[in-house]
Image (tube, rainbow, N blue to C red; front, side):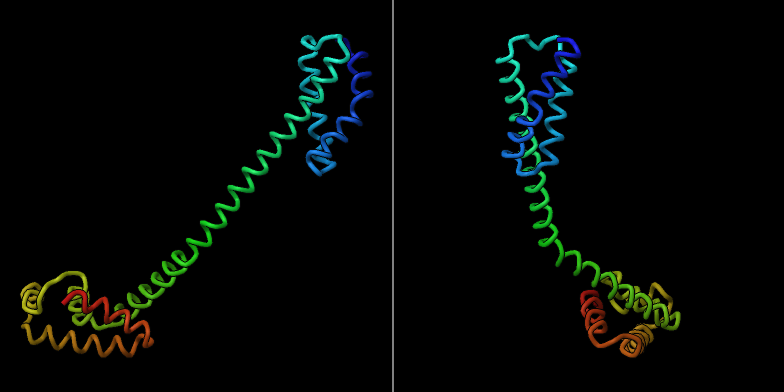
Amino acid sequence: MDQDSFEQLYRKYYQSLCFFARKLLKDTDIAKELVQDVFLKSWQKKESLENNPDRVRAFLYQSVKNASLNYLRGTTRRTSLETQWAGTQEEMAPDISNAIIEAEVYRDILHAMGRLPDECRKVIELSMSSSRTSEEIAELLGISASTVRNQKRRGLQLMRQFLNFQTFLVFLSMFKQHP
């Protein structure tokens, strides 16, 4: 098919193919774009187009129909994926929010622990990071078990002053998990 024949084909069917695609897609701009794509692909394969006008017309309508359906499938798939993503985000939102809150509480606790006197901080950190007894901590630090207990008591009093009530309760729950 030569260029003049193809241009005649374009002028003859462009409007009707756009109307057809618009009926399927309910969107004029997308319909025009798909018809343009069909003509472009047809031009690229012009050697395979027959000179039979009925077959060419059927080919063009079938191509526009397929392009429209592929577009709709892609839109539906994207919409479905976006809906699934939004649902996942809604499901994850509480988990993400909780993780952020936990991280902020933990940061507050670490900041408060950093304000403790050195010996007191070491005792509290060892108490929280391991399941060591006061005697084991005393041996590790080279101090008496009663000093460890006094440092724990002092550390808890200071942490209560440094933290708000809710954060202190979280700290206590963490502290209690490690005797």
